[in-house]
Length: 87
Image 1 (cartoon, rainbow, N blue to C red):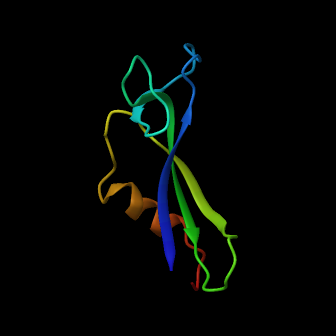
Image 2 (cartoon, helix red, strand yellow):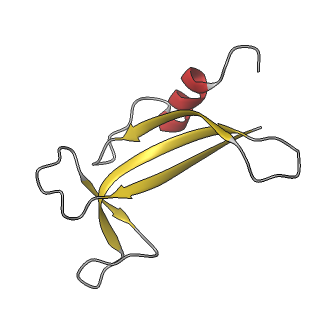
């Protein structure tokens, strides 16, 4: 079983950093709005059925700002390239 998550790495003050986007954040606000400036990353991890809280990421990729995604969506891209052979 695999899990796909997107997480934002906030960089509000990094004005010269390339390709930053604006993303929703439930925890942080900018000018009274639930928005954070930074980069979004897609994480693909394989889950286990043991009773622990550990998992290892199989693949991590930056999700481009602006909503432009390759055909099949970002999740399909991560699944096909991130899963090790034979699993």
